[in-house]
Image (cartoon, rainbow, N blue to C red; front, side, top):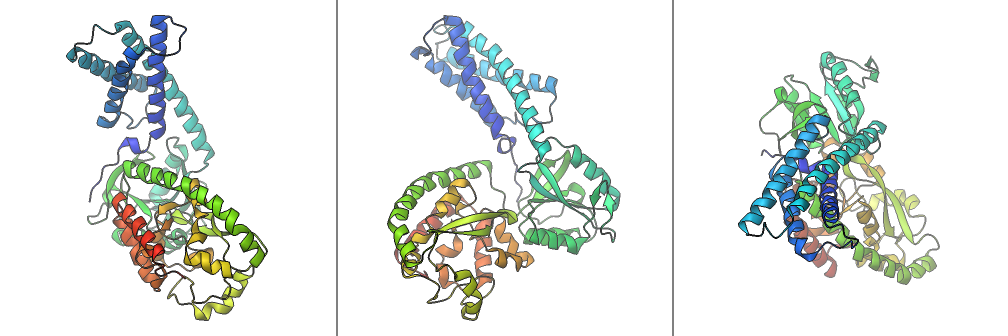
Length: 467
């Protein structure tokens, strides 16, 4: 399957900035022309404002006007801004002419808008670029990239990545695939090993992407193993192999690459999924507050200690975060877990048992009704989790993962997922959990998310599979 990733998915910041420019420019043009002290635009001009915004969105969504925006110099940027505003101006004038309304509105207002918006858009875009470049140089919240290449190409690739201002990239590891090298330095970066060391590094460390510049006979095997772990892989055109899933041509640090991933969400899907998460988390947080008032004293009386249980979990691509729940166990639960491992009903890297003696009386109730999960709306609101995804593993579970297990971390973890919707704890084979998680990731759609949420609600109401 081949996909095209538009520049809109990467430059939402510029899109929002341009909307601000368009609105501010129109208001300024109106006030300069009318010389009024009243800061309300006349109702008659509302249609012009709407048409200007409409034409702006047409330019944004029907053209690739943001393609390569961070690479454009000042002169090219000015040309692009003028072109952008010419489309807006031309579209508005044509529509007003067709509606026979062109004589109703001041052409000076429309002309001033063109001039002001061109100047303002150019200046603010340039300022935003400077800010992005400065932020990228600091490396905060950067994309963690592993480079796998040949000895001959390694130095040139590292130098180009070091000079890149366009993307937030941090090189986390360098691996040489055509020679037996380890602990040697290339361009100030230590070589961490070859293929096997790369697989282990990706399996155990935070890795967002792998940049593969290699055309050896075993390149397909390397790509397959990386994809088994669910890691987004960029590989050069000469390493292109048919059959890799979700292919899309992209630019990474001035290199043209073909990207393959277990799943590539579209820009619209990402925005809608995050919007759903925020809209669901707000009432979820209010219910959590109410439950805290009701359940908090009972939890504390039955087992003195914190009301909330905080635990480090592993999220997307191996990132660690604190997950919240209402505490349903006694304070020494983690210490007693080792004694109870023999009664684990799960086959694989998860722990569940019937009649767990570590659970408090109120804990049994809130687990059976799934009320203990509500504090996770904090994680959803923060963006650590999503409404639907895969359940985040604990650190000790994650450390025992095999390569194919990591693929379930290719997306944000969720409050619910395919496993829970398919029977929750009735499924006791961890490999089946992994299979269901991968099925969800590969077949992701917003419709499937809604279906899983409804199936989970039905499971909770019927108390199906709860422990």
